[in-house]
Image (cartoon, rainbow, N blue to C red; front, side, top):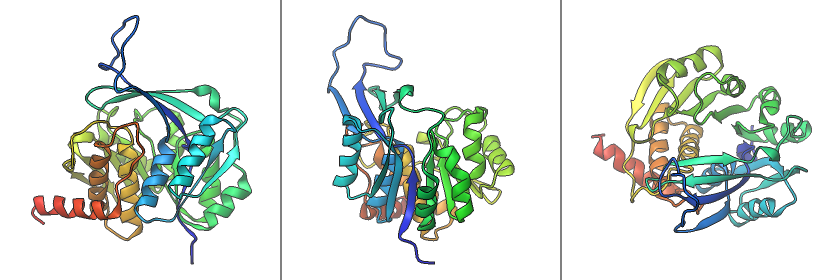
Length: 306
């Protein structure tokens, strides 16, 4: 079957305000002088995945709710400037926004505005079906209202991935996404035993591949029941910010996966892209290109004796 879209990204469109802080947690004080300043820019998880897959040559389409507000205008402009098709469904509550506190070591804490969504939010069923029918793959962000779109995606036969981010392995909200996806990404940051959580996802859901990213420790991989560990790639420049590293990992993994690479090599692509993302300041929404990704993978394979 011919497809017009390689990756359909659902959800995760929004705006972040980046605030650099002296340390995390932020020391209590009446005030702090902030340098290099406070910057508001378009780009949340779905935006980052859509931009990253597009930068790697995958035909990408992004679908989400957006408000008719300045934040929505920033998101529309970002997609227009990067030539990433965006279908924006009107959100009367406004565009999603967050404040990211970024420490000197690149770690961050995100504060999400919970007033920009409602439990009753839905993506139009016909729109979801039509876009999914044209897509090879759908990547679903764990944002409202994407959970309700999962059964529609499943009916079309499209493969599905999701990113559970820093799930603790217990919060029931994430389970709907974890158990409906064919490919599950998550961070190991809040997990005592990543392999146990990964096996639970595979046993209770339909995932053939589960990946837990672990920062400087690389990534844990569970593919068709077989566990593996993929070391972290060496960043090509100093690490300045971890924002978007997981999204970059997922996008590069998907690029390799959709091109028929085995899961372990897909994870290698992910570590290279994730390391690159850590060298990009949070105030920018830049993604690794295909040439740089291939060079980085080749360098990692050389260093590992392949």
